[in-house]
Figure 1 (cartoon, rainbow, N blue to C red):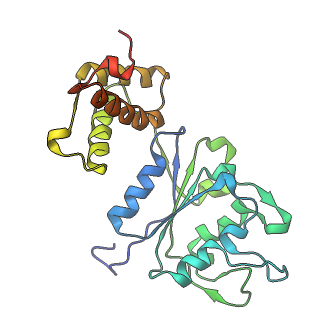
Figure 2: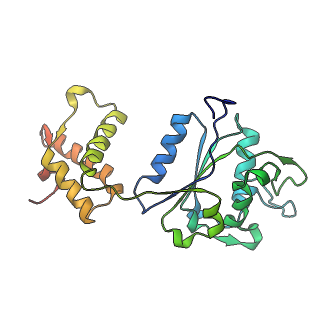
Figure 3: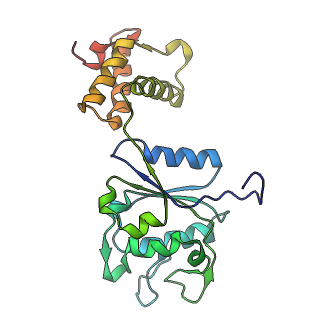
Length: 239
């Protein structure tokens, strides 16, 4: 629609469900980059009450606008990408507007989002229906059904044994690129080291979240010991 219609980038709310450390958050950030959208990350485990999203009521002395109001009023576009990470961990607090998830429902519905009012600026309604929402959840059983029904659900499965080596190789190259390591300074990584790491992840001994730190530390260790390759020994992988 964006390419053949009004040129505006918008997609219905997305819910990514899968175990921790599988790359859900990374996907959201990459999606924002590809679509050239402003990106805002919000870890929901630290949020109590819905004041974070829709502001706190004007009756309180410390009333303040919420995230949605600030992003649209102070931003340059009407369609930022907002990631609500681990939405099932959001808490509630009657003093701060109740439950985050309950207030989110009206934001996920396009019709109601067209008439949004921040609680700190009552009487001023504006259209927030172009906001692109991405939610992540580790366990769907902990998320209310009304939220699931208002999103397009994608189940993110752990990578297969065949996919893991490619993921590790790609992650290592990405690490080198991000740190601008010159071509002549780049160390290769042995196939046996890659397969050993893949086996550890597949067995559950290591998590996907551990890989980046492991590869970075292995690179440093190999450099310090004068090696030209990251081996199983450098990674501390037993035969």
